Image 1 (cartoon, one colour):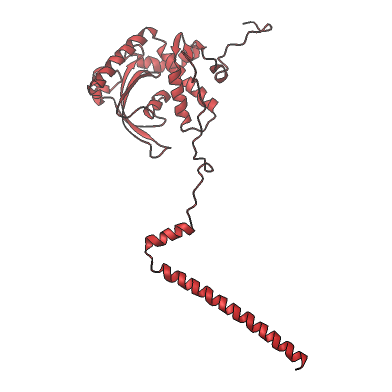
Image 2 (cartoon, helix red, strand yellow; image 1 turned 120 degrees about the vertical axis):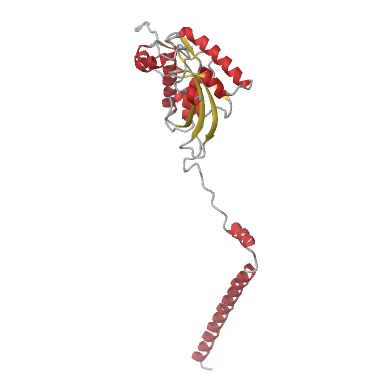
Length: 286
């Protein structure tokens, strides 16, 4: 047999072999696809969903990348035993400063030093007012304790508001403040509204106007950016005289500017450096 004819037969044989193998592989693949779809066609929707979940698991979002992971709040005044500041000789305890700072930190992204400073300023304002009538502080607290004890014994808080509150309109409205949202009230009051237990009479606590007891009827925090609460409220003005309300409004800025503020907790020297006492040195004796 001629050499060229032999080479041609070998080439044709190899080509036919490759073609046959390709067709067989395609046939098998087709059968597999057909078989797969045939089997899945007999499954119900739940079974199909289970298989899809196995082969295509849902991708979990990383909340930390979106900034949704709550940051850890930096401790503040946790080891203080006694007052942290004095305003015109009146002691300021750590608790209201800490509570207001932690409230700010729960929804604001500012530096912690800024939140600490704002909490201190707000509480100092409350005590600036209160300290104008130092002799009325203890009587006001005693009266508030009596009212709160009555509420805890079962007397409806609305009745106690009508009988005791000095807030204008409290007798007609029973102290109902309606729906409270952020920014409507002075900061110490707002912090209580959004942190105090629901359905309990909470307080007393001071603001620039006086001493307060509140009852949180309900609170909706489904939208973290716009929470609101339903609040009922009892107020005794600083000085225990309703007429002092207008005096407080007229003189608050002047009282703040003239206040005698003393830092007691050393931690606050770094937070409020403009109030810190200068260190005694040989070149700069105090």
